[in-house]
Amino acid sequence: MIDLAKRAAEVYFYCPATGTIRWRIASYRNVRKPGDKAGGKSGPGYEMVWIDGKNYGAHRVVWSLVHGEWPSQEIDHINGDRSDNRIENLRLASRQENAQNLGLREDNKSGVKGVFWHKNIAKWWAYINKEGQRMTLGYFDNLFEAAAARKSAEARLFGEFART
Image (tube, rainbow, N blue to C red; front, side, top):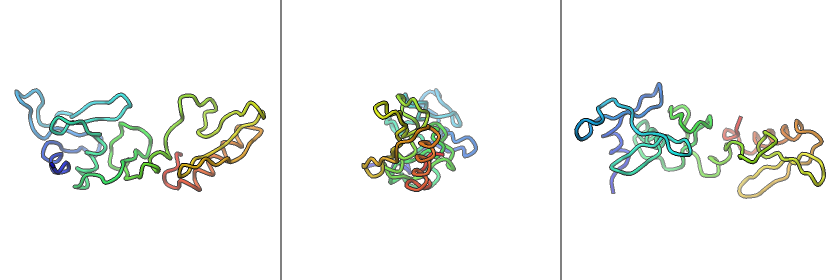
């Protein structure tokens, strides 16, 4: 099995100002040259690069180039921008921590994560998930109160992984 961190360092270098990965070596017939930007975007918006014919998330490669070892956990984009691979925007996270700062679902109509209109009781329902358990934070007469309850719970339960 190849050492991915070592192999990544052989073929790429990292530009910390932009968060981009660039080729260290030229390709066959000079299709790419040293210094050319490596990789491209995936469907979900992550930058991807290739190591020996296999796709890897650029954020994982950046981590390995900076820290000298392949990341042992998931890599979280602190600001939620999947294409922002500046090292100060990346941190190790468990799967659960990484999920705590996900953005809004596409079907969310309130504009606030974890807050929905409960039509049967005509109130705003605020909830939060922690360790696989859904916790109801309450039912509120207005969206502002429900959003405040949700944000307070995020700060209390998720700490640095709360989405701000």
